[in-house]
Structure formats: C-alpha cells, structure tokens
Image (cartoon, rainbow, N blue to C red; front, side, top):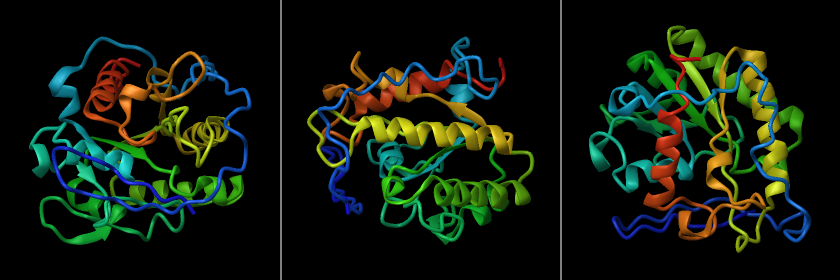
Length: 245
C-alpha cells in the first residue's frame, strides 16, 4: 500500500495514505492528459473567468490532495474554510466511499458526504476521489463505489451540480504509481460522469508537462500540490465553469 505525506510549511500536518508498489514501470511511455475525447458533452470546456463569485459556489469533497486547499488556506476562510470536506485524517480512500465520514466544517460533526450535502445543499460540488486505492481495485468496483457515492448525494440534494475532477498526475520522481494508470482511472471517472449526469473537469491537463508528468514545481513530494500547483488548479476551475457550458 502507498504511504506518503502532504508536506506544508504553513501547517504541521502529515497525512498517511495506503501504498502499493508500482505495477507498471514509470519508464514506459506516458501519454499526455490533454487528449481526452474533447467532443464529449460532459467535459467542461474553457469559459470566461468566473473569479471569486464562481469559486464561492463550490464545495470540494476529496482526499489528501483536496485537503491541501484547506491546509494552505487557498479558499475563502483560509484554514477555517467551510468549502472543503475531508475525513478527520485528511484523506478518503476508494473503499465504501458513501459510508466514510467527513468532518462537517461548520458544525465539526463527523458525517457521511450525503449527510453533509443534506445540511449544506451546495450549489456546486467538486468530487476529487479515486487516487487513494484505485490501482488496487478493478474498474467494476471503482465505478460501483463512485456511483453509490454520487447517488447518495443526489438523493438528498438534487439541486447540487456535481463535477467529477480528474485525478492529478504524479511527478517523474514519484515511484509508487505511474501516470498511465492514472489516465486509465480518469477514463473511468469520465464514464461515471456520463452515466450519472455529472460534469467532468479535466484539471490534469493543465498540471502536467508535455510527457504527462506533474510539473515538479507544482508538488512538494511528487504527488501533493504546492500552493503554486493549487493556484493553477483553482485558475483552471474558474475558467471551466458550469454556467457557460
């Protein structure tokens, strides 16, 4: 199982994630993340910049790569933002996602994502999940668990527009998993978006170099995003809005 830490100079926070050895060599050819089927209607296309107004409508549900938005105070409210939902340990795995509990940022109570959605009914929810464990399960299980999570949220907050964000690539220096596998997993996420009526946000394409690797300056450990990488992510989100699509 994979073990890595979200390193931050802004806060002393270490997040542990399950680790397995890489199953496919990092030296194999990795295709860029920008060649998804751009004609697909669920993929959010480039728009005008939505700015702070658009960003304020969004709640982020995810794993330790999402937790960085809170740890580095990237959103409204800083480290006390109410816009990030993660479990108490800062990360969420692929297994039984609908039953894993997040810390509701306003009340501080641990509850499922669906329970949090029932309370807050966010206008837009960006889900960034799958990286923690996806390579250890098959497509069938991955899709099934992801769909169950989405359906549980839609059942209690049908007004919420759900965006499924692509898993981010990893740096060339990261040796636990390869970008070819991540890209395959992103294909599964895009299919889930199609089947559930969600949107797909291909953020991975703006974070990688020409060989498909996460740009080294965007990460502190080869995997998690630095404030610079998070800024690039936020800029991409604000220029790929739901409203103009």
